[in-house]
Image (tube, rainbow, N blue to C red; front, side, top):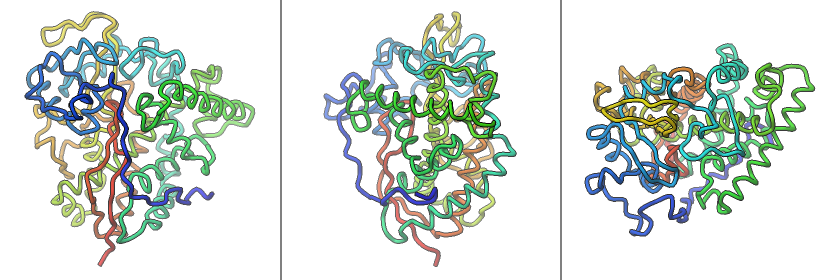
Length: 442
């Protein structure tokens, strides 16, 4: 299959969602009703409850925490006890303080829950000096010179995907556009066969949703089996890359880098999976979320049509408004005082990026609105800050910019037809289905 060939059939069928494990939600026994934040005992508020995110009911909870309890303790959740940090400046303070707050996988890495021995350390879930040494190895794959090389390729693929869409007929934007474009780019970055690119998307979905019956009906046993396949697949690629002359794709860089060439299969899996998630879920869900947001705020869509030069700033605003990864976890390496409370050594902390990006005390204009010419748009914290700032942030922005340049060249309007289906995850904030119709230029 050529790398620009569509693997989508432009289906418009809404996904049928199964029940999640009762341990993941407090609301399944109440007819799936998620009550408003005003009805909740604050001491029992648990932000990682997946139904909250599937139903998009987290906003009033995050607002209440920002105003009433900006450092909130949840003593009991299916991911263990954890602190929630919800204000922009507090999140920034923790994110840049890598000496007192750890990302290391021995404590659980960047997501809430107990450590797993199956996916071990990666540079994303490692502390200094290992983090920087391994990060520098992969960084050339997304360096500015590489982005200049990628731009014509990304544009060609984007044009082909958009030209393949049915005009005047409904289809699922998530599958036909967002997943397709990000899978192509991932396969290029990893020098992975384009005809098998959807395997990368699958491994990303499985990794972040091990208990979601719509993705992993076999639970953790299926999760381990599929990620074991991923590990064996990439181990073979890694060994082949070692035996070949150095190149500039991620696998070759890892195979020849002094800090990464001696990785174990589990360490390789950790790096590969987290790079896949970083390259897949973030860009993919901003591609869907941006279109959804423009339809929610039609005055902003009109503003864009009148002034295409707003696209670069709009891309930053998309990423702020969407916040594709809702939180990042850190583990306290010592006791830390904040807001009159003590974060104890060993405690889990969730930095809720999604809340910081809507913090009324930081943003000059209504943060719940999409404002494509927002002056502060580039101050969003969706990419993180400090040593762990997203290594591929400029590539994500490039893909989104090109997508909207090509959309505006082809279509008068892309209309969202219904509310999207959302991921059942408190970590990846995304979409599984977004029905749209493309209206041609007059």
